[in-house]
Image (cartoon, rainbow, N blue to C red):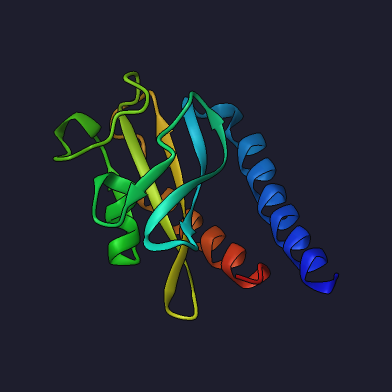
Length: 144
């Protein structure tokens, strides 16, 4: 029973962060925002988590596309023009730029935060810094 309650707490925490992020995007031209989490059945693969936007890929292998590259490198990928990114996975053809931040816990990637935008070259160093801080807070406040 305690394990289920703990799992429910983790899910609610992620959803709380997601809701806050979605509300904060009122001034952005964001067309997709959400999480991919590491698939417990295939640790080299991400599976779609909570998101807002058009339908998205259900699974992404590490090293493939922007999300998979962020997961493989345990880092952040800022893509000013997705059409110029080799191997970009286009879930929404209107997307122009993308930022993906890895969520790392105990030295391993547990999820990524993915945000797509309708404007090219919209992400700056400040966005990257704050999204990385958000990822650290999500990592620290969830039991992965």
